[in-house]
Image (tube, rainbow, N blue to C red):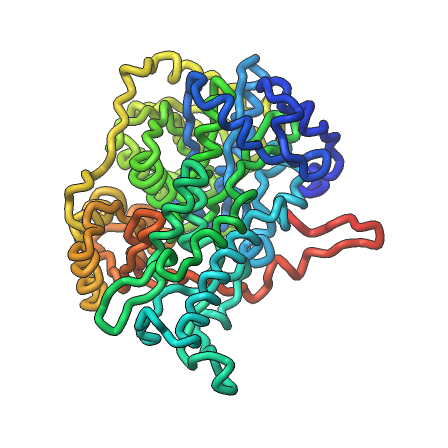
Length: 559
């Protein structure tokens, strides 16, 4: 069996200027990064802004497991399938982070015959967007520390600096550091922290900004520290906004690449559904809707994180309304939720499936709360038996969900045609006036109440326990005028609860909020739960161990 990277490297790519001709894009409207990658120019975005929107299809999934779900693979396969059926379709994906690529995942470009290419470049430096975000973030950090060193005209309290440095790599040693050691000229000694780039506020800002003007306004609102009197100090106060925007000038433009079947793909921003909300950029999604009749996009991790943030943050801020939601599961993952070890998942076990399918059930219930149409798809493995597939199909149909099998890893677009036909039927039945999408909570609800609403309604918690410091922080945010912000809850992706080991559909648990802070530029309040880390670490056997490059420059080991 060929690996994903072998399949990708054997593929014949079309020049990107040829791929996008089907969308009515001409060469002069692209900014090229070689033959197979390009950015959408400001001129292109301006030209299409008044065109009619296509249908928006969100792909989400059950909670991720070591068994694999294939959310991105299904997203790519569905886009390819829609094109095979003669539809004008585009996919809108998130960019991969180097941290997981070299850490636990080994790549994030889809899989099998449903990948975006060039996959090696996408999984590595791509067009440099994340490097630009890292630079803008760390420029602000440098200007902050320099301001303190050069006389501290703003009376910044070094003990109340909240802005963190960042790096797009899993590196636990950087979580807590001390800076400014050495001579007096080397700066003020203080504790500092690194977060991974894709969890940074600038990542979220880039994904939520409509244009350069909006980007600059959001950057200026970033709170970096507090004065001795407790007053917030912003990036605008440090006169950093313009320089940061200059570094992000190209990064804000959506990237265009292709799938193995030459379906256009706008890949831009947002991989982490913890902390930074983890969605494809608003700019890319809206551009895709102007270019195509059908847009397939994805949200990060399981629906309890990615879909919830897609709805309650991205859609709230942008006005986007999904026409249909695809909920991805696998028989293997459902059996894992039923308590079966990974090495035993290839064996038929309907009893374990019955036990673990409650995870899927809860996600179905959650999505219905948003008023969206749901199509459940099983990303099919060769080990799945007819009895197992029939059980899941019956389970979904009994709950009023459309159901489709997807064989997109093995067969690409052909393997997604059953799913694509279900999507076409669902969107055909949904006129613009009949879109019943609704948000989970209103802006006027208090911050604690918003967190409790998500915890109870989406996670299934009995309630929320707030650390005294987190409670105090939330109260201060409301006093500062941020009470109308949505909440971005950072929680483990592996469980509906905030405890990774609680699989299936946990009951009788309380969510513990240990920290809360405002991302004033992004426009949301972050609540950190459980043991979630803003700077991940590498596992004992990192994916980097398997990655190499030969004498001809050919990369190996990326999944």
